[in-house]
Length: 161
View (cartoon, rainbow, N blue to C red):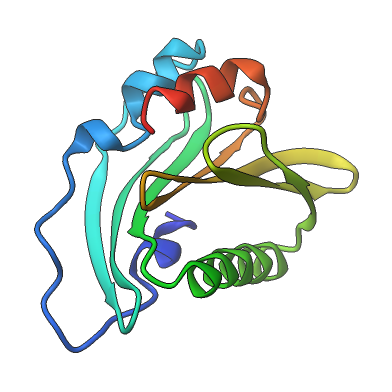
């Protein structure tokens, strides 16, 4: 999975916190609400980042019938500026590593949110939607030609905040 590196790129010296409940993640069920029914086996991972806590990840890749790569990351907001800079840096590195251009927009949900739209040759190929809510940074990364960071996506994402 091309996005698996985002889920496991950092490690720290203390053991990770217990896994967050899957119900807090954006999952296959949420994709189905957006009309994207996929047959995939999700993977879970955790990475402990010094001074920032444990990033809890959920991800999957489906090639048919709705070709999609999905990663959902949950991270406690201990040091707000550091967490946001880390999310922006990860999005920049991801775009650069995959030859995408990116454009950042402010989102409209949660306490604060940002959308990074990834494009190649002028065509949108995916996005990362990061939302700060109730002490957690929720980042959902989607690579799909069927799903956009639109009002329908935001409505479904709000159910996870």
